[in-house]
Length: 342
Image (tube, rainbow, N blue to C red; front, side, top):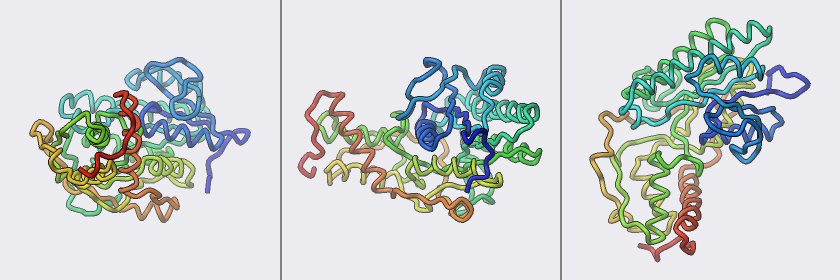
Protein backbone atom coordinates (compact mmCIF):
# COMPACT_ATOMS: atom_id res chain seq x y z
CA UNK A 1 0.00 0.00 0.00
CA UNK A 2 2.83 2.39 0.79
CA UNK A 3 4.11 4.71 -1.92
CA UNK A 4 6.17 6.76 0.50
CA UNK A 5 9.83 7.19 -0.45
CA UNK A 6 12.33 6.35 2.25
CA UNK A 7 16.04 6.39 2.89
CA UNK A 8 17.72 3.07 3.67
CA UNK A 9 14.19 1.67 4.21
CA UNK A 10 13.78 3.76 7.38
CA UNK A 11 11.11 6.42 7.21
CA UNK A 12 11.29 9.45 9.47
CA UNK A 13 8.22 11.01 11.07
CA UNK A 14 7.88 14.31 12.88
CA UNK A 15 4.87 14.48 15.22
CA UNK A 16 3.50 17.57 16.92
CA UNK A 17 1.23 16.92 19.88
CA UNK A 18 2.94 13.63 20.72
CA UNK A 19 2.12 13.85 24.42
CA UNK A 20 -1.61 13.87 23.71
CA UNK A 21 -3.91 10.91 23.24
CA UNK A 22 -3.53 10.64 19.47
CA UNK A 23 0.12 11.61 19.35
CA UNK A 24 1.16 8.94 21.83
CA UNK A 25 -0.73 6.21 19.98
CA UNK A 26 0.70 7.42 16.67
CA UNK A 27 4.24 7.38 18.04
CA UNK A 28 3.70 3.84 19.31
CA UNK A 29 2.36 2.62 15.98
CA UNK A 30 5.06 4.22 13.86
CA UNK A 31 7.89 3.06 16.13
CA UNK A 32 6.41 -0.44 16.08
CA UNK A 33 6.47 -0.36 12.29
CA UNK A 34 10.15 0.61 12.22
CA UNK A 35 9.88 4.35 11.65
CA UNK A 36 12.34 6.81 13.14
CA UNK A 37 10.03 8.94 15.30
CA UNK A 38 10.67 12.53 16.36
CA UNK A 39 8.28 14.67 18.36
CA UNK A 40 7.86 18.29 19.35
CA UNK A 41 7.12 18.76 23.06
CA UNK A 42 6.94 21.83 25.28
CA UNK A 43 8.83 20.53 28.29
CA UNK A 44 10.72 17.25 28.50
CA UNK A 45 14.25 15.83 28.37
CA UNK A 46 15.63 16.14 24.85
CA UNK A 47 16.06 12.41 24.28
CA UNK A 48 14.66 9.07 25.35
CA UNK A 49 11.52 10.07 27.19
CA UNK A 50 8.62 7.68 26.85
CA UNK A 51 5.52 9.41 25.49
CA UNK A 52 3.53 6.32 24.60
CA UNK A 53 4.76 2.83 25.29
CA UNK A 54 8.04 3.44 23.47
CA UNK A 55 11.00 5.80 23.66
CA UNK A 56 11.87 8.09 20.78
CA UNK A 57 13.54 11.42 19.99
CA UNK A 58 12.00 14.54 21.50
CA UNK A 59 12.59 18.14 20.50
CA UNK A 60 11.74 21.01 22.80
CA UNK A 61 9.63 23.77 21.37
CA UNK A 62 6.23 25.29 20.87
CA UNK A 63 4.05 25.69 17.80
CA UNK A 64 4.02 29.44 18.32
CA UNK A 65 7.82 29.61 17.91
CA UNK A 66 7.90 29.45 14.14
CA UNK A 67 11.65 29.97 13.79
CA UNK A 68 12.32 27.03 16.08
CA UNK A 69 9.94 24.88 14.04
CA UNK A 70 12.02 25.63 10.96
CA UNK A 71 15.21 24.62 12.76
CA UNK A 72 13.71 21.38 14.03
CA UNK A 73 12.44 20.43 10.58
CA UNK A 74 15.84 21.16 9.03
CA UNK A 75 17.53 19.01 11.69
CA UNK A 76 15.16 16.04 11.31
CA UNK A 77 14.63 16.11 7.53
CA UNK A 78 11.39 14.11 7.94
CA UNK A 79 9.57 12.09 5.30
CA UNK A 80 6.22 12.91 6.92
CA UNK A 81 4.99 15.65 9.26
CA UNK A 82 1.96 14.74 11.37
CA UNK A 83 0.38 17.84 12.89
CA UNK A 84 -1.70 16.77 15.88
CA UNK A 85 -0.89 19.65 18.20
CA UNK A 86 -3.13 22.51 19.21
CA UNK A 87 -6.09 23.38 21.37
CA UNK A 88 -8.55 20.49 21.22
CA UNK A 89 -11.32 21.64 23.54
CA UNK A 90 -14.49 23.19 22.12
CA UNK A 91 -15.47 24.47 25.56
CA UNK A 92 -12.10 26.14 26.17
CA UNK A 93 -12.21 27.79 22.75
CA UNK A 94 -15.11 29.93 23.95
CA UNK A 95 -12.95 31.20 26.81
CA UNK A 96 -10.06 32.34 24.57
CA UNK A 97 -11.02 32.36 20.88
CA UNK A 98 -7.95 34.34 19.80
CA UNK A 99 -5.51 31.86 21.36
CA UNK A 100 -7.41 28.96 19.83
CA UNK A 101 -7.18 30.45 16.34
CA UNK A 102 -3.49 31.26 16.84
CA UNK A 103 -2.46 27.72 17.73
CA UNK A 104 -4.96 25.82 15.54
CA UNK A 105 -4.66 27.90 12.38
CA UNK A 106 -1.82 30.44 12.35
CA UNK A 107 0.69 27.87 13.58
CA UNK A 108 -0.55 25.36 11.00
CA UNK A 109 0.15 27.90 8.27
CA UNK A 110 3.68 28.42 9.61
CA UNK A 111 4.35 24.69 9.89
CA UNK A 112 3.09 23.94 6.37
CA UNK A 113 5.08 26.82 4.92
CA UNK A 114 8.24 25.64 6.68
CA UNK A 115 7.64 22.11 5.41
CA UNK A 116 7.10 23.41 1.87
CA UNK A 117 10.32 25.43 1.94
CA UNK A 118 12.29 22.49 3.33
CA UNK A 119 10.91 20.29 0.56
CA UNK A 120 12.06 22.82 -2.02
CA UNK A 121 15.54 23.07 -0.48
CA UNK A 122 15.98 19.33 0.08
CA UNK A 123 14.67 18.34 -3.33
CA UNK A 124 12.56 15.52 -1.92
CA UNK A 125 8.86 15.12 -1.19
CA UNK A 126 7.83 15.72 2.41
CA UNK A 127 4.31 14.64 3.19
CA UNK A 128 2.03 16.41 5.65
CA UNK A 129 -1.00 15.03 7.49
CA UNK A 130 -3.23 17.54 9.27
CA UNK A 131 -5.57 16.43 12.06
CA UNK A 132 -8.83 18.21 11.29
CA UNK A 133 -12.14 17.83 13.10
CA UNK A 134 -15.81 17.07 12.51
CA UNK A 135 -16.47 20.41 14.22
CA UNK A 136 -15.76 22.13 10.88
CA UNK A 137 -19.19 20.93 9.77
CA UNK A 138 -20.97 22.47 12.78
CA UNK A 139 -24.49 23.32 11.60
CA UNK A 140 -24.32 21.33 8.37
CA UNK A 141 -27.69 19.89 7.41
CA UNK A 142 -26.05 16.77 5.97
CA UNK A 143 -26.43 13.70 8.16
CA UNK A 144 -24.12 11.91 7.85
CA UNK A 145 -21.44 14.38 6.79
CA UNK A 146 -18.85 13.56 4.14
CA UNK A 147 -15.89 15.27 2.52
CA UNK A 148 -18.21 17.42 0.36
CA UNK A 149 -20.46 18.62 3.19
CA UNK A 150 -20.70 22.36 3.75
CA UNK A 151 -18.12 23.76 6.18
CA UNK A 152 -20.05 25.85 8.69
CA UNK A 153 -18.50 25.79 12.20
CA UNK A 154 -20.45 26.97 15.24
CA UNK A 155 -17.59 27.43 17.74
CA UNK A 156 -14.20 29.19 17.77
CA UNK A 157 -12.60 25.74 17.84
CA UNK A 158 -14.52 24.66 14.75
CA UNK A 159 -13.67 27.93 13.00
CA UNK A 160 -9.96 27.51 13.74
CA UNK A 161 -10.00 23.98 12.37
CA UNK A 162 -11.94 25.14 9.31
CA UNK A 163 -9.26 27.72 8.52
CA UNK A 164 -6.53 25.10 8.86
CA UNK A 165 -8.57 22.76 6.65
CA UNK A 166 -8.77 25.42 3.93
CA UNK A 167 -5.02 25.99 4.24
CA UNK A 168 -4.48 22.31 3.50
CA UNK A 169 -6.33 22.82 0.23
CA UNK A 170 -4.23 25.88 -0.57
CA UNK A 171 -0.93 24.03 -0.12
CA UNK A 172 -2.19 20.95 -1.93
CA UNK A 173 -3.00 23.09 -4.96
CA UNK A 174 0.49 24.55 -4.63
CA UNK A 175 1.86 21.08 -5.24
CA UNK A 176 2.49 19.81 -1.72
CA UNK A 177 1.38 16.36 -0.50
CA UNK A 178 -1.05 17.42 2.24
CA UNK A 179 -3.90 15.28 3.54
CA UNK A 180 -6.61 16.31 5.97
CA UNK A 181 -7.97 13.78 8.45
CA UNK A 182 -11.46 14.97 9.38
CA UNK A 183 -11.62 13.11 12.66
CA UNK A 184 -14.88 12.56 14.49
CA UNK A 185 -14.89 12.12 18.26
CA UNK A 186 -12.55 9.35 19.33
CA UNK A 187 -11.71 8.19 22.83
CA UNK A 188 -9.49 5.89 24.86
CA UNK A 189 -8.05 5.52 28.37
CA UNK A 190 -5.39 8.06 27.32
CA UNK A 191 -7.98 10.82 26.85
CA UNK A 192 -7.12 13.71 29.24
CA UNK A 193 -9.43 14.26 32.20
CA UNK A 194 -10.59 17.70 30.98
CA UNK A 195 -12.66 16.07 28.21
CA UNK A 196 -16.26 15.20 29.03
CA UNK A 197 -15.87 11.53 28.08
CA UNK A 198 -12.99 10.97 30.47
CA UNK A 199 -14.76 13.07 33.10
CA UNK A 200 -17.68 10.66 32.79
CA UNK A 201 -15.66 7.45 33.03
CA UNK A 202 -13.40 8.64 35.85
CA UNK A 203 -16.28 9.98 37.96
CA UNK A 204 -18.40 6.91 37.28
CA UNK A 205 -15.47 4.87 38.60
CA UNK A 206 -15.37 7.02 41.74
CA UNK A 207 -19.12 6.57 42.22
CA UNK A 208 -18.74 2.81 41.79
CA UNK A 209 -15.98 2.83 44.40
CA UNK A 210 -18.17 4.77 46.83
CA UNK A 211 -16.15 8.00 46.80
CA UNK A 212 -18.57 10.21 44.87
CA UNK A 213 -22.34 10.52 44.68
CA UNK A 214 -23.17 12.64 41.64
CA UNK A 215 -21.90 13.32 38.15
CA UNK A 216 -22.57 16.87 36.94
CA UNK A 217 -22.92 17.30 33.17
CA UNK A 218 -24.28 19.69 30.55
CA UNK A 219 -26.41 18.74 27.54
CA UNK A 220 -27.16 15.03 27.76
CA UNK A 221 -28.85 15.05 24.35
CA UNK A 222 -25.80 16.23 22.38
CA UNK A 223 -25.18 13.63 19.67
CA UNK A 224 -21.76 12.52 18.48
CA UNK A 225 -20.11 9.78 16.43
CA UNK A 226 -17.60 8.19 18.83
CA UNK A 227 -14.78 5.87 17.82
CA UNK A 228 -11.67 4.22 19.24
CA UNK A 229 -8.57 6.45 19.18
CA UNK A 230 -6.03 3.82 18.03
CA UNK A 231 -8.27 3.08 15.03
CA UNK A 232 -8.32 6.76 14.09
CA UNK A 233 -4.56 7.08 14.49
CA UNK A 234 -4.12 4.13 12.13
CA UNK A 235 -5.99 6.14 9.49
CA UNK A 236 -3.35 8.89 9.74
CA UNK A 237 -0.60 6.44 8.84
CA UNK A 238 -2.66 5.14 5.93
CA UNK A 239 -3.11 8.69 4.63
CA UNK A 240 0.61 9.36 4.92
CA UNK A 241 1.48 6.26 2.89
CA UNK A 242 -1.33 6.43 0.33
CA UNK A 243 -0.43 7.36 -3.24
CA UNK A 244 -2.41 10.62 -3.35
CA UNK A 245 -3.12 13.46 -0.90
CA UNK A 246 -6.79 14.04 -0.11
CA UNK A 247 -9.41 14.82 2.54
CA UNK A 248 -10.80 11.87 4.47
CA UNK A 249 -13.67 11.69 6.95
CA UNK A 250 -12.78 9.23 9.72
CA UNK A 251 -15.85 8.08 11.64
CA UNK A 252 -17.90 5.04 12.61
CA UNK A 253 -21.13 6.20 10.94
CA UNK A 254 -23.06 5.51 14.17
CA UNK A 255 -24.09 8.31 16.50
CA UNK A 256 -24.86 8.23 20.22
CA UNK A 257 -25.99 10.84 22.73
CA UNK A 258 -24.05 11.86 25.80
CA UNK A 259 -26.85 10.12 27.69
CA UNK A 260 -25.99 6.88 25.88
CA UNK A 261 -22.35 7.31 26.86
CA UNK A 262 -23.28 7.89 30.50
CA UNK A 263 -25.64 4.91 30.59
CA UNK A 264 -23.02 2.60 29.12
CA UNK A 265 -20.36 3.87 31.52
CA UNK A 266 -22.49 3.15 34.57
CA UNK A 267 -23.45 -0.27 33.21
CA UNK A 268 -19.76 -1.07 32.70
CA UNK A 269 -19.17 -0.22 36.35
CA UNK A 270 -22.03 -2.47 37.47
CA UNK A 271 -24.53 0.31 38.25
CA UNK A 272 -27.94 -0.12 36.62
CA UNK A 273 -30.00 2.71 38.15
CA UNK A 274 -27.66 5.45 37.01
CA UNK A 275 -30.13 8.35 36.69
CA UNK A 276 -30.05 9.18 40.39
CA UNK A 277 -26.32 9.81 40.18
CA UNK A 278 -26.50 12.30 37.27
CA UNK A 279 -27.30 16.00 37.53
CA UNK A 280 -27.54 18.54 34.70
CA UNK A 281 -25.58 21.69 35.50
CA UNK A 282 -26.25 24.76 33.28
CA UNK A 283 -22.60 25.82 33.71
CA UNK A 284 -21.55 22.98 31.43
CA UNK A 285 -23.92 23.78 28.57
CA UNK A 286 -22.14 25.41 25.61
CA UNK A 287 -23.41 28.70 24.12
CA UNK A 288 -23.99 26.90 20.80
CA UNK A 289 -23.73 23.17 20.23
CA UNK A 290 -23.24 21.47 16.88
CA UNK A 291 -26.11 19.48 15.46
CA UNK A 292 -25.88 15.72 15.01
CA UNK A 293 -22.29 14.81 14.24
CA UNK A 294 -22.20 11.55 12.28
CA UNK A 295 -19.62 10.86 9.62
CA UNK A 296 -19.61 8.92 6.37
CA UNK A 297 -16.18 7.26 6.14
CA UNK A 298 -16.91 5.29 2.99
CA UNK A 299 -14.16 7.13 1.07
CA UNK A 300 -11.52 6.13 3.64
CA UNK A 301 -12.87 2.59 3.65
CA UNK A 302 -12.67 2.41 -0.12
CA UNK A 303 -9.32 4.11 -0.78
CA UNK A 304 -7.38 3.50 2.43
CA UNK A 305 -8.89 0.12 3.33
CA UNK A 306 -9.63 1.60 6.75
CA UNK A 307 -12.41 0.59 9.09
CA UNK A 308 -13.11 0.84 12.83
CA UNK A 309 -12.33 -2.27 14.89
CA UNK A 310 -13.74 -1.35 18.33
CA UNK A 311 -17.42 -0.50 18.77
CA UNK A 312 -18.98 2.12 21.03
CA UNK A 313 -19.83 -0.18 23.93
CA UNK A 314 -16.39 -1.77 24.07
CA UNK A 315 -14.72 1.65 23.88
CA UNK A 316 -16.68 2.97 26.87
CA UNK A 317 -16.16 -0.25 28.80
CA UNK A 318 -12.38 -0.16 28.32
CA UNK A 319 -12.25 3.43 29.53
CA UNK A 320 -14.32 2.63 32.62
CA UNK A 321 -12.33 -0.48 33.49
CA UNK A 322 -9.12 1.52 33.20
CA UNK A 323 -10.49 4.28 35.44
CA UNK A 324 -11.68 1.79 38.04
CA UNK A 325 -8.05 0.71 38.41
CA UNK A 326 -6.71 4.28 38.27
CA UNK A 327 -9.19 5.63 40.81
CA UNK A 328 -8.75 2.66 43.15
CA UNK A 329 -5.00 3.29 43.23
CA UNK A 330 -5.43 7.03 43.58
CA UNK A 331 -7.89 6.70 46.44
CA UNK A 332 -5.97 3.80 47.98
CA UNK A 333 -9.16 1.77 47.96
CA UNK A 334 -9.43 -1.97 47.22
CA UNK A 335 -10.49 -2.33 43.58
CA UNK A 336 -14.04 -3.44 42.89
CA UNK A 337 -16.05 -3.06 39.69
CA UNK A 338 -19.55 -3.08 41.16
CA UNK A 339 -21.80 -1.72 43.90
CA UNK A 340 -24.28 -4.55 43.76
CA UNK A 341 -26.36 -3.28 40.85
CA UNK A 342 -27.24 0.20 42.07
